[in-house]
Image (cartoon, rainbow, N blue to C red; front, side, top):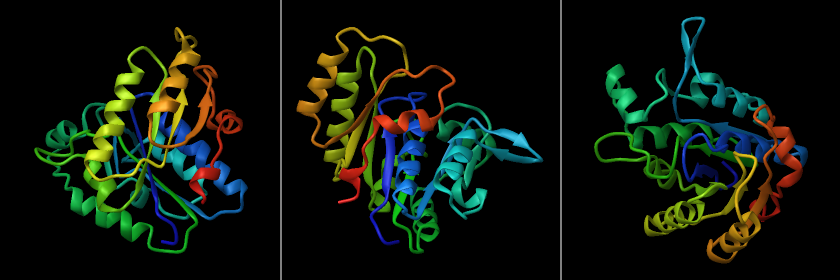
Length: 229
């Protein structure tokens, strides 16, 4: 693995992590970079030809142009769209952060220029009784990218997440303001507050693009220069 991977997390679930991750990957590919993407744990999968498949993982595969097979990209696929540790317990599966970290490092152990590992939900989503997805991020030495859902409460959610990342010994690489809804009161003031207070560069402000928007529509609103230095 040539470069330090990035770990896309968020201030909540269903806020556009995959939307942003896929756009960042496509931007990297436009620069001629060899990309790879992983979704180690996915809850909310559909049965396709007898196998559990997650739409987010499929989007990451398409955006990255990776040659990795589906099971390598998404080793833990869980059917119900609930907290991963609960879905895993219901399925009789034990998720272990060390095992997932080794899987990710093995999957990315070839020459690539830009790699994204996408989490599930937020920074501290549990994997089991004691571990969270944060342990996977730290275990592979990835730098987090925070997707901030621009809605009421986002300041607290974003600052708490940044604080938790720093407290765990992580280094926030950047953040993206993403708008999952059409309007937010005092939007510009909220973005300005986050730019002042978050300890990392803003990689872009993505406006509300509609419920059926594709990640390519987000690309003009993002800048990956800070991730390539």
